Length: 325
Image (cartoon, rainbow, N blue to C red):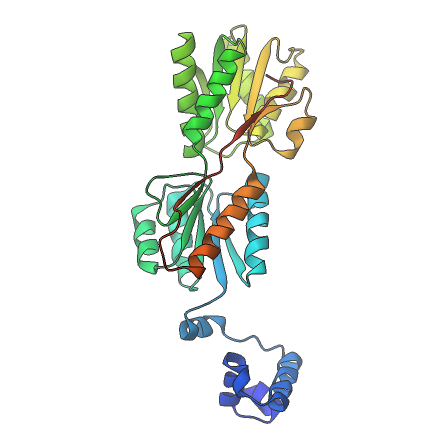
């Protein structure tokens, strides 16, 4: 700031005033200061400005994966709206580790964000204490809860699992297996699916579990395991993600299995490739763009009103039927 003041021929106090309250500085002086800033590449201390104004124009966003299209496409829609209202996004990748999420929350809160976006409704006790004490709007996405920290936008994972089971039973499948990654939301879908399918058919549901993120390769590996164990006829495989499901389809095609006659496959997420697999993948669709837009608008509403607003936004889901089931 001293260099900016020297080049502009003013004091550091005048430079500071020009940055925080430009209307109090003459247009000529303001132009000299802006020219000096451009020459020096000076970046104002946003944290100090936030402390003074109680507004940082930053939104913290924490997601399990920045490369997974399921989250990145939601963030794109969220960011577009926040950008339009003058906010920048600070992004952290947390995996599915509550401890890692808690550390990220502490780091982000130290930067004084105006609001925070979290993924899911399960957080550590320490994270909840920090968020309640921060006194800023919080939106939890990809899930719904009757008792959100502030507000939530998503859908019922248990209902999605129940709907998948009803779909499979109504389609005539007599046996079922699940393939699930290390995500508690996926576990809720799996458990709901298994309970409903068993209740309606009288047959227990098998499972293959991984404690890491889903991948195409693990989907292939899971089908190999199931075939080695002996897969009953008229079976359906309910996968916790489309990546798993695509892997199952590839391995099934390699082995000459007919889909869905020998084996039916249901995915989750309805990613862009789902319609282009062979056969097309039946999947549970969540409108990720709507999810991001509703989350952003919920925060904007909270910035504008001190009154209690809608806390739960259920955007629902849809089973998209294609050739795999």
